[in-house]
Length: 459
Image (cartoon, rainbow, N blue to C red; front, side, top):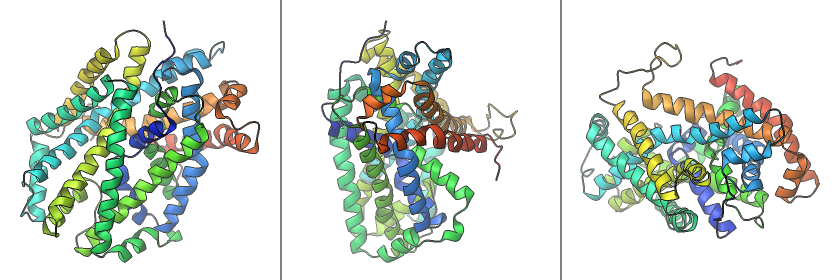
């Protein structure tokens, strides 16, 4: 039999740091700035900010409201809030979907978190010194080709995450983010300051903020919407479960705005940390792992005090990865604990073992299992290995589906009075605006994104 979750965040600030930690991941640090440059610069930034404000913040408010209303984990929240409805079995399914999705994400994210930990070790031990870019490409390729290396560092990321989660809300999650998030901000701002003194800022401003409205089209709109949803951890049960630990006196609208602002701030500031270094050194600009694991180590090695800032940069990546894995790990553990199936420590161990097995398959799919394509019978998925499938289906597809479920659930199924009381806005125009967005705007937009994801795009 379920019971109300007793432990809570000690303050709104503690929640905010944890939620920001969840939202700030590797994609903010090396993907977002590049996407900005490729999609119209300042025009894309304006579009992205508009989407965060109009869609992102209302959806964060929605998931926090579902979580805090009964102060129970996601599955129980969907069950209790749909009590008496004929559609309750479907909404129980929606609760399960929200909890399973982050497990799929962790199946590949733990492997990438392991890369960052490995590179912290490599740069600390001088294994990235005196290398040309071709050499760093070989170092990265060697890591990818070594099952033992990938599994060792992936295992370390699982152990760190499971240990933090096992200690509970205040001693585990809260203590971890109170240490990691300030360090993350300090490192990021230090890198920006260093970049400012070494040139390249003018080119970065032009690259990121010169509006090119000709590049704005429906594809750009979809990409900006998807980036906002993924960046804010929507549809991954994080805000649902973090909301269940949120004290009643804390304002959900203020917290939602805080998370959205901080997440966007980190994404934009990351551009000013990375791109001046790229431009000043005349290196080729590319996105993803190539930029982070192959190009930047060469630049750090050539810069004055570059070793120090290289260490800081890879620590930044590691902190961003671990704060995200913590938030994705928590929903499953909280569900098992709340239902009395396991104690928190045992739940952390059980979930950790299961995720280790899944992440090990992901790691092996990069080398010894690279020729295994489990869904080869599907034309869209025929060339995807296990890691590709987990990313495509969980991080791209199911997050959208779960965000759609949450919007329809709170907008159309849950009694209006529940939202009115929980948000604390009164029956004001702000509340009516939020409810209109959730009921009438979010479902068709997210539904369109899902159709596009399924390969039936209308553009």
